[in-house]
Image (spheres, rainbow, N blue to C red):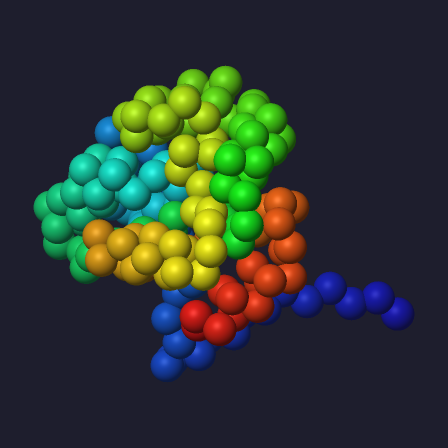
Length: 163
């Protein structure tokens, strides 16, 4: 015997799954603010988030009568003893991002040469400060790309302790 069943379950108390859209440019930020629940960024530093991404998507959401959108910032993150060596490895390992137009525009807007310029690297105090700044400017979620520089386990443990 074979049966085919199509069904749907509705749970009255549930809400939909939030939709965040990768948006960096003006048009996509307007669409994300109007139609989605937020944006997720990559290769975008705090200055660009604060001056470009967050105000534009918030305005679009407000104009559409929606609540403030989620801002998910994707950042390379590592606790490292030697920031110069880490920057060199990051720029070599993530070189392609500096060559892709959308990310290059964000790096240029940030005023940095390469991916290491927006990476959150250093000791625990420096990471805590950088994460605090992101929170203060309106980042709601941090998507940490823990790097293979330094000791990744130390970085993971630190990030877990900050939750």
